[in-house]
Amino acid sequence: MRNVLFASVLFLLSACQSDNEVPEGILPDSTMKSVLVELSIVDAAYNVSMTNMNAPKFKSELFYEQVMKQHGTTRAQFIRSMDFYAQHTKRLQKIYEDALVDLANRQAKANQ
Image (cartoon, rainbow, N blue to C red):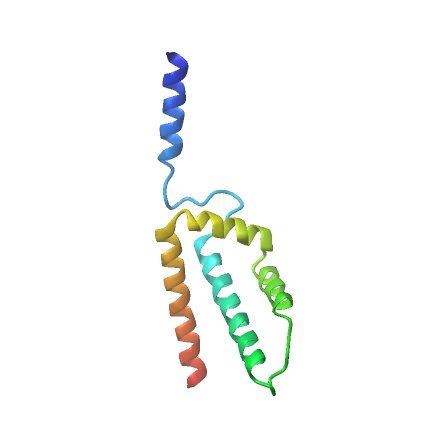
């Protein structure tokens, strides 16, 4: 009985982990947002290069790796982080909303 009680307490304590805490090895929200913004820009540039005959061609994979390097992460850590945030949909939604705001601000600056 004592073991069951102990196991139950441990389970409850682990379930009460704050939603604001990010486990070790998972990119923080702000870094995830920045990486997603940069990857979106790479994807947009790649799509333009594929549809415009005069645009320079490039391999998006090289740019993806550069984005990861700039943010001090790896593709594996990014994928683990996406898996974590996919399980925390409210956080992921907020990250994407912030990323869209950032992209809109960049576009507005570019259009000036």
